[in-house]
Length: 134
Image 1 (cartoon, helix red, strand yellow):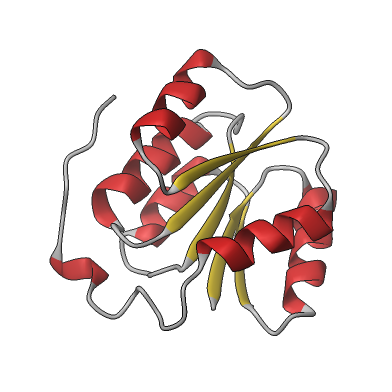
Image 2: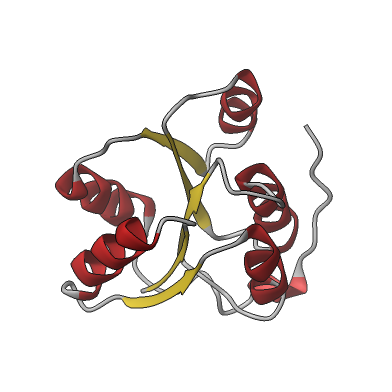
């Protein structure tokens, strides 16, 4: 399973990456929304863990890009404060889950396992493009 982590806090990046790597997952870690948007245009992920409150290009922008370009990627939005906009996106799109900070690593792992069906969703994901705008 290929997992993307987009998180601006280096300590959180390290903890998530080390924890999830211990299960044998392939992990890519990015620190900004700008990096993430550029990266997801050419890479496929089974699961993306996105910090909602990124500086500059926000987690919202990254999530909207994933929804438009990666129709099979399961998205986990992490946040210390759940906004109405995030609730709206999660309500409109079943593959977006909200995980409030602070969160349990075990619970996050269970959510990743539940979100990911056997087989890679990345195989044909680039053939479809959708427009998504809440």
